[in-house]
Length: 114
Image (cartoon, rainbow, N blue to C red; front, side, top):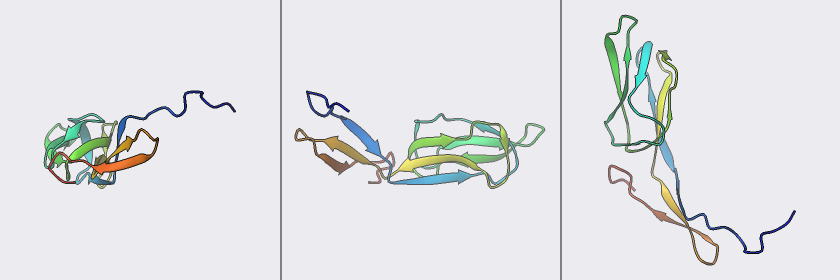
């Protein structure tokens, strides 16, 4: 194993998820997502909806917290209680100082939570 002559590479700025909100389906049917992964959402924003097998909307799913979409169901089949999406929040900004030490500072979630 060899080491880089220039030393460690700076990570710059990245975000660490401290908690997440999970959205579960209240109905069985066909799921239609309205967001993609890595999309920032507000609390209460519509994430997708579930229809019955005739195309009638039977459930609209909304983000429980403000943050970034970590996971959204990629298949249309949905059963009651299945995970629809995970929203990450309460993040920290990881900063690498000039001395190479990792420091963390709180950042604001989309709804103003820290």
